[in-house]
Length: 271
Image (cartoon, rainbow, N blue to C red):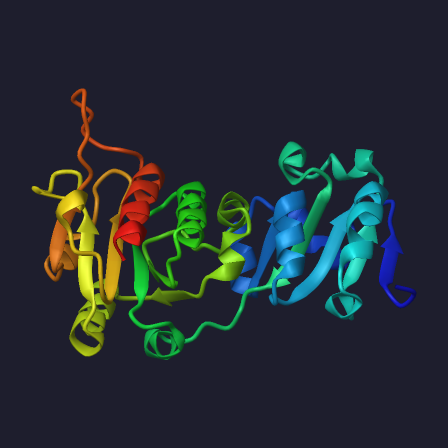
């Protein structure tokens, strides 16, 4: 790997390191069309994916442990910055990023129609309606990858799966799933139902129908709503059905990330 673009640094003030210095401004990263991957497992999975890598920042120890195992073509044109652990500890959230981070290019998204065209048939989708916490979005994405979801539809009222904390909590699951951001989720789901014969199934803690009694076969899209208020009225109005997870000991609901794991496991089991 003699042709690597390796820079040994003693300061974080280089212009190329701006994304690492601005971790608390995730919206700015989205506006630039970039995302940040942090921590060993996420960075390893990022490098194993086909997503575009812009740069890497790490200690010498991580360079020695990881870079030799990466395909040389994968690192062509990628700037690799190596710094002392003490300096990297000044970056916000050091215990999380563990001294190894990467910046990548957010992939160009297909439209919903274009996405459906390349998915397996029947398709299994998840839509996010107003999930505002990036950590929850990340865990939901991880669950989607684990249980074989084909793609994710994200409303404009939801945190993006490309936000740093979402990428981190997805544990690299985001690199395995196509995402479609839509301005009007209700309209997107209506088109999905009418044009692509997709049943819209809403997760609702108060629904009478149980996940044990639902037909999860065929083209389906499971909708997960806001952490406090559930799905929006406009989305609820076009639902094919609403389903709940049976619970005991007067428990009224689960965190949306936990509920998604139960719902998606049951759906996968029945498909």
